[in-house]
Length: 493
Length: 120
Image 1 (tube, rainbow over the protein chains, first blue to last red):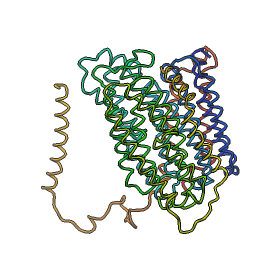
Image 2: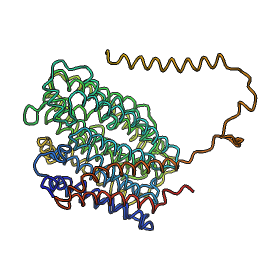
Image 3: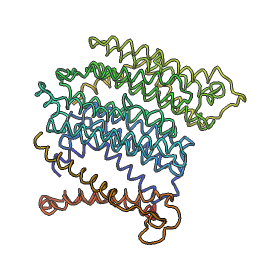
Image 4: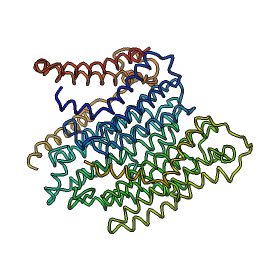
C-alpha cells in the first residue's frame, strides 16, 4: 500500500465505517428477514453513527485534500460530518417511533437514510465539481425514493414525482454550468477555478456569470432557496413526517456547506485569516444579499395563509435558509461561525417541531391546524416542547434561535452597506411570529370537543424533552458551541 | 461562425427534405380510406382488446438493475487492463478489485434473495 493510499483510506474512515454499517443492514435485510420488524436496524444505525462520529474526531488532523484533490479534510468539513451523522441518528429514532413508517420497511428506510448521509458528507467535503455532483446525485436520487416511501398513498407518490422532476431539472442545469465552467477555466477543482478566475478578471465573458448562476441553481434546489424552492411545501406535505424531518435538516445543511465551499473557494480569494474578498466583477455579497432577501420574503409571506402545519413548517424552512444566507454576505469568519451555530440550533428546533407534527398526525390522523386544538392541555409535554421549538424558530430571546439570529445580524452589520438587509430580516422575523403563533393558539387557546388526555410513548416524551433542553440551554450557554464553530471555520481549506 | 454555416445548411436541408416528402406524398397520394386500411397494425394479426393496459413498473426495475451492472462492467475494464502489470508491485490491485467485486456481489445477492428479478 502506498503511503498516499493509506492516507486516503485513513481520512475517509468515517465514510468507510458508514458504508460498513450500510452493508450490515443490507446483509441483515436479506439474510434475516424475520428480525426485520425489531429494533435491530435502529441499533445498527445509532451505533454506526456513533462510531462514525468517533472516527471523524480521530481523523481531525491537518488541513489537506485527499483522493488527489477531490475531497477536503478540514475542521469545517469535519463539523459537517459530525452534524450529518448525528442528524441521521436522531432522524432514525424519530422514524422508528413513528406509526407512519410501516414496520416491514424499516430496514430499507435505514438503508436509504445511511446512503443519503454518505452523499451529504461527500457534498460538504467536496473540492472538485464532480465529487459535488456525485454527492448531490446520491442524496437527491435516494431522497426521491425516501420521499415516496409510503408508496401506497397517493400523496407520497405525488410528493416523490414532484421532487424527482424538480431534482432532475436542477441537476441538468447544474451540470451544464459545470461544463461551461470547465470549458472556460480548464479545470473542475475549486482551487484551480478560483485561481483562473482571479488571474483573468478582466474581459470575463458573460457566459461565466451564467454558468455560476446555473451552479447556484443546482445547489439552491437542495437548500430550497429562491428560485428553486417551489418543490418544498408540496414534498414536505406529501411525505411522511419522519422523512420531512430529515429533509428539512440534512440536505439543507449539506447544500449550505457546499455553497459556502464552492463560492468562497472558486469565486473569492482568501485575503487573511478568515477573511475573503470577492473577485473583481463577481460581486458575491450583493448577489447573496438579494437572494437571501427574496428567499426570506417568499418563505414568510407564503406561510401566512397556510392551514396545514407541515406546509407552514416547510415555508418556514425556506425562510430560515434566507436567514442563513445572510451570514454569507460578509464573507468572513463571524458570518460563517454564525451560520454554523444557526445550523446546529436549527437542527434541534426543526427536528423537534416536525417530530411533534408527526406525533399529532399519528394520533389525530390529520396535519391541519384543527388537529392541534387543545393539544397543549391534553398533553403538557407536547405543548411545552412545541412552544419551546416554535419560540426558538421565531427568534425570541432566551432560546437558541434568538442567539443564532443575533449572531447572523451581527455578522451582517460588519459588512458595510447591508443595513437594509438586517432591517429586512428583523421585519421578516416579526412576520414569522404570526404563523408560529397560529399553531400555539390552536394548541392552547382553542379547545377540542372531547378533551382526552393523550398517552405519549416514553420514547416521544424523552426525545422531545432531550431536544427541547438544548434549545433552551444553547440560548443561554452558547459559548462552547460558538468556539467550536469558530475553530471549524478558521480551519477552512 | 463560418465553421457552423455548413452544419446550419445541413440542418435546413434535412428539415426541407422531410417536409417536402410529406407534402408531396400527401398531394400525390390517393385518398380511399376503408375500415380495414384504417385499423391498427399488429404484425399481421387481428388486434384484440384495448392498447391501454396498465404498464408493469417492474420492467423499470429490471432496466435500472441492468444499467447498474452494465456500468459495473464498464468500470471493470480499466481495472482489467492494468491488472497484470500492477501485480508486479504487490497485491494492492487484487485487494482493490476484490473489494469492488465483493460490494457488487453483495448487491447481487440482495437482489436474488429478495427475488427482485422475477416478473411473475
